[in-house]
Image (cartoon, rainbow, N blue to C red; front, side, top):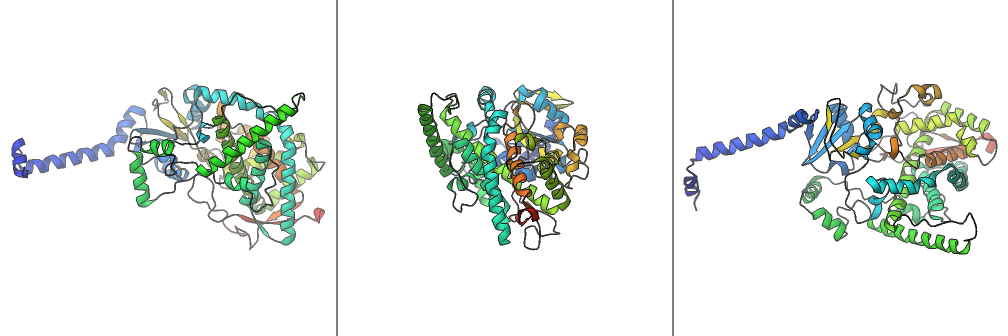
Length: 505
């Protein structure tokens, strides 16, 4: 059929067809440009059209920072049918994290994976989260931390011995690597019962797998266009990830999942053997059969990643700030020598290190290891004219409050005094939200502080950390620059120099 007969069938002229095409194009453009206005009228904020699965992009933190500068503290994003509300308003945070927690109990949209990582406590929802939280909470009691402290103390001493050797050799130290070895060694010993010594070991298999759990899809150009297109086709991502177990969309490295599967099975077998051999002892280790194996594996991998990556990053940046601020380092050293009276600090002594705690909190403020958190609305609720519709994802950018001059004067300056007891009383607790807030606050917070304080006590009372022309950053430079990444990844690896104090020479 010719084009002429096709037009005759509808009684159209070429001019009519051209007019129709132009009208449709204008209508599509109008809807695209004004979809945010429609949502503003309905939800109280303007929604901005974006493409792709933004919540899983490797540079989501960087994009959030740009959008906050461009759109203000509360705005919406839309990708296809996905609605996302971003808010840096602490009053809204208070409702979402605390007052209306039951409506925002779920943390993340469904993430497709053939591994059990996303069945862990951090990602679990509803009743499943409550069950896992109840089972895992006793792991972090004061009594358990006191017991764990012995293993942490030994690793902190190993860390100090290693740094002393480097100091005598005059060698700079790649801080993220050695801090990661320290934190992964603690996890291997306390969570898996391994006889781990990773700090001075070149090829520590457990550590190497621990730092490579995620497969970040840093795609660009045509590769990103293809991936975005495939994700929009129903069942393609699910079939690829969960059925055929391919790595293309899989966020977890499958080789890493297999490795820790074997490690966990060996740990369970070992604990069951201990239970049979020492069943009459009150302090015998017990296997708690309340978590399914897949849940145990998922939570184990979460502990490995979160416990190693976040604590190692904080310790690395704390050492850097002590090197860059010698007067702060001197005050930490003086407090340690005055408070800690023995080679093995007690929990009571560690808890009495007030200024050292301020230094750690200021490090966490400047370098938050978890930049944001997401919640899912169970029902539609409205707060001060802002409506959060059922099923929408709410993003709370913690990093925004931590750098907000309304809460922290001169926010880019390292100043531990802003966390003094007197100043902390004036601070809105939600402004310092590095471990979350409300019922879903991080269970491992106290363990993280324990690891950080033990490391600082053992290292700083024997060694001074400094910057010079051989370190990275160099003395007098602008500080550490970071890549556009959800994790804190320096553009150049941080390398610091340690010197023996006179008392330890």
